[in-house]
Image (tube, rainbow, N blue to C red; front, side, top):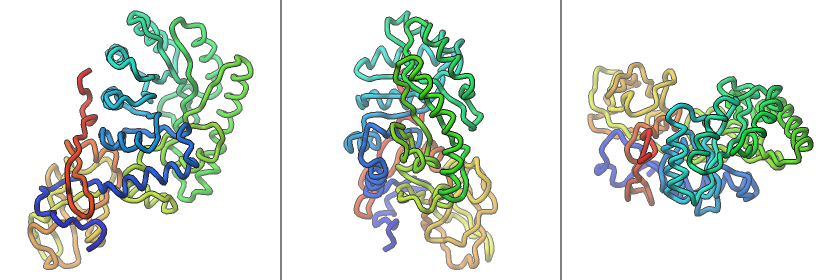
Length: 367
């Protein structure tokens, strides 16, 4: 049997997303090894897994800090009593009240969120004051991603403004450099170093000026290895927990293993070189061009069309396939693929043994 083959696959309906528990646990240890087991220097991003059991496994490995993208993900972490939760997002509108309500309900946790402007920061601080709790914020710094964040040159002025706002504590700096995607580690590290240098210089100057600590939470999966080599930087990778075909192609040198595998079944034989499976848009992240998956037991199969419930493949010889045959596939992008599933099918010792509910795929849980 190949490592991914499941003995009781006939009991698992398709499409489904399998999580191989042993490989997932090995990925946690690989991430910790990279950090020399300094658990205070890693803050995994849970947007990839959105699942309590996965986060609990990280906590059992000694990880106490987490990052998330949605209030639902933050609530999932709070329900697990995760000690330190960073919402790597700037709440606006009704999200501010939801964010405050979450903190009121889970006072046992430390919460912080991001800001990149004084207007929103004041709104966040005021909402917290009404609830009689203190707002804790990280300054979101834009060092090249150009998605959110204050430009490096404007951060000193923003910090000065924030320090004058009542009921607000600046906890540190947040830097995400997901735009760095060069093919080789050496190129990625060189670009990451160049983008990070002005941030580090600014941090040193501001800490000396104000005599306050400004720890930096930095990076994602593509720059994890680079930031791990810096002293006093907290790394926040997410995809490492399951890994995917996209990052494996980009970063084959990384130690992480595929721990999440899609299963799909052949549903039709169209002609001598065309088959159709049940892996539609609703079953795998569709934001990338073809291919959106890499097939483990049909590596030459080539996706040519996809709709909501169907994926059409070109193959060398369709007679090699039969209706009902199971294909195993690695998604190019695992994070939004997980969000398409209500539950993950857990594999141990080559068999599906249980399922884990992906509770944070919803935009809200109770709040």
